[in-house]
Image (cartoon, rainbow, N blue to C red; front, side, top):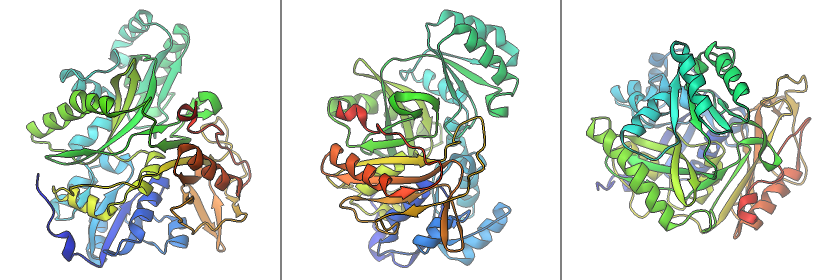
Length: 443
């Protein structure tokens, strides 16, 4: 394990965050008060971060222009938030030009960019996962046959990137065949759905497990639980995530389960990538289904989850800059510490989010009642801005996931109450949110 000996001498560091959603805003919050950090830049601009965090921004039309602006602004570390730039090779380009990047390479980004590739990769390593079949137009009939062989419900996943929304869970085999045909024809999820992974449905509960790797070693962060469905009681369509919490109760996640996840899933993955000369650097997100106390890997993502990032960042007691800088350099921060707190976040979205219509209400002006959106008081919680815009010094909710309430407390119940207290003090037209975030922890 290689330790980072450079950190003590660093100061006045400029950081560039690629992406402008809630995940990226949370990372900026974690970096904002670090004495080593001078300025935080976003690309594209994050209007709320400009307004509330005094963040700067960089625009670019191509990677050469990006590189010029990075050098001009003396950026010492680039943090890539969303998946799309990773699949476009941004990490490889910047690293080849001597820029330090906290994010995996294009080769490793394929673990998220192609679910078909990911399933093949982990199956070759005998990593426990759901039974599956990859289907394209060339073998559609095999897909129909595989659907017939499964019990309902049946899971269809678009192989390409869909922003967390390319998963269908069908309770009728004929409907599954119909939806499969629409996906393969590009009528659902566009080109991302022209290759489909059909999976058996695993009946359990899902956890989000994040690990940081420096290419040689890795550490596991506190487990989270996301809430994918749009409505309470896990009803409605899948979304990018309507809320999350961390400090999972021991009845749902414990040292025994963590050891199984590491031994059976994470360690084989990192070892295989390193042995194939593709060492993984950055954060990896394992979507895990727990069935009868056994972990199964549903999917890999190659970045922080959103909204999981919003509950992980406040837990960091060790400097977020020290961690990301060190891991990007292939080094390690020993004894990463976390606050002994519980964190719950609740996403407030527009009423047309993942719906089949577009509301004319957006952008909608946001009003704050008895709460300061700039307050990042770690005792009770804070506000995170996602899809928002600014006009005439006022902040507006855009269509999509607009704003996130992050509650912090000594117990999950206290953190949850603090989050919903923040929700009650924020208003905009058509505000939609789930009222049961963290329900599994409070049964």
